[in-house]
Length: 506
Image 1 (tube, rainbow, N blue to C red):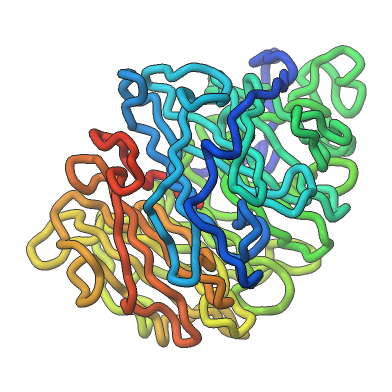
Image 2: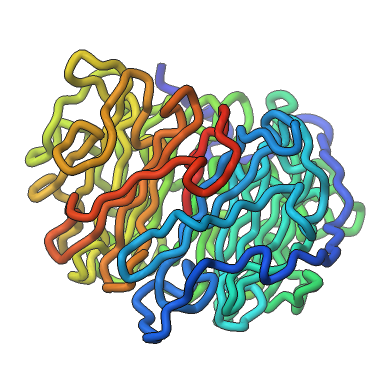
């Protein structure tokens, strides 16, 4: 079914009746005491190479570190309490042992393990305190339990700082364009009827102190965006009726990906946002020194929340990041919308597995683009697109799953020279089985510091939902199975049963 907006409200996100709110107290930030020794990696390089992006490197050794969420893990006897596992990069790639497992039961991490919390379902990386080491903000399945900030250092992640009430999908980026990493936070919100609801949101300007205090709390939205059901425009702040305002946004909003789409030096945020009357849509929130602006739509519309995977990167090498949206309820195609000085709205490509040069055939239920990661693997200055196909059937197997890597060119994405792999591909560890859903999550990280992004992908349903992660090295020609590896929760000394290890990767 094609979902359509009401003709009388083509782009507005305003409701038609009284104000609906989801009040939430301001973020309360408190320091914890997780020791450096508790979270230190096993070894550190002495050669000082710096091939990895700084945002991916917790200990400053020049190799990207992987974070794998295991939101279903049983911790302290609490089923589904969840945890994250940090696997450090090295000149040989990822080294899962010794792994670093962090949960609410880890010494110094604020809070306690709670059944069903799903700690580690979402998280974000970035150097929040400006010390040159990336930090990790860990969220949960819902916003209410709050987030936890773990701080990077030469010995790896340390400390534990609580961010109360804002645990759903934290996002990091230089949203105001000042060269420092900022933190965008979202409170709880659920659809409450035909109209958008008020969702609490915060934009914390970096650098943050280790106690979690920001340099400044910025207006979440630029004043030009403010409105409320009782008062339109900035006047809504005077009577506390803002839906879109300095500390709230009309939604629910599900943050998806961060990048600089319009090339102005401020990072932008792609969201999946409830417009009202049963319609959701991808929206681009452009960053600025005065808060986000809800600039334009960034992909397909649909009827359900949290619908499709999104990645951002410069596919055509023109200096503007492009937005790649996977298939979902709204469409069976992957969509690439190309960035420009005016943002999105110009050039666009939409394709499925029938794209010339791409191996495979489009079939119902494939979930083409079940995960999306966009970064430069080959080193030619143009980003490749990694796409999960978690519902792919082959060799008599159902939903075994596969992965595709598509090349970026000056004219955009192409299927020529693409690669498709699965667990039965020679050189890839493991054996494909029905229901594995290989390719459910993926990330592109330079784990060996050679200047080429490596592909990390997961099958959270592997081994009766214990989950597993695969790593394939990147080269100037694309991906190689030489040195490919795979590991599960047991390899990092994490809880195994129903962990859904690799449910989210960064």
